[in-house]
Length: 323
Image 1: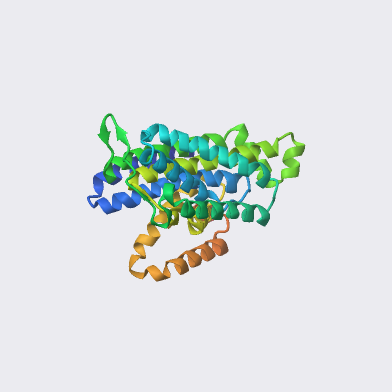
Image 2: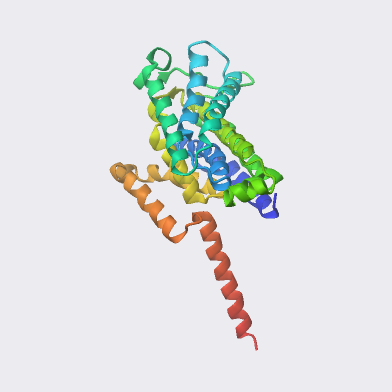
């Protein structure tokens, strides 16, 4: 990792530690928890979209699979929550592998449509398999996670579990993108033909990152299920898949720190727009349009570049003013 990454990690760790100490309203802790869950999903999705150049509209389905597998096994069959989360990640990873092998042969909008179709299929299955999933009404009574015999049944208790997990995912993502694998992913994004000519196994790389991002989405979904103790098909519908992709785009494709920024902004935004909920979709569209027009590389990298250019101009003017 770069030196700047260690600085940002220190800032993130400080913010995560101080936030629950400074915020007394549990509702804002809940919002922070949802931000953390989305950070886990978006970090994995950014590895796929921002670094590898493969666009997926199916990650809502992977989130939903993680949530429902955990919920069904613990509620219906009485499995313990922690092993169930691991099992949910494994099953979702296998599903992603089965889908990814044929789907990642496709390119551009064909890949988008294939992953979207998978999202729709999973959504319909969760509605129709009513005996297991509860159908449109959802699945309730999912048990909370426990740690040392203590139930993590409050917003503040789950805060640390979610954000420690998110922090570890971010650290893992940063290590990956600065490794040989990360350089291979960037090569694929730049030109798949050129990457293959340089000896990069492009097909294997794409499948592995697709599966890894799906597993992270399942991890987030499992945490969500045991945190909220309820899950319904609406939780992971088509619009959720779109929202997490927008988080990647707005935060900055190819920027792990941008993933955190995008997740925080677009998770908190609906809460700020609660009084005008009917305009929230319009707000999403306007923000996306503004970012794509003025900061096509993403909001966080764009703002960083703007600050850098202003600083360079200030240095130039300072040199000119010297006698």
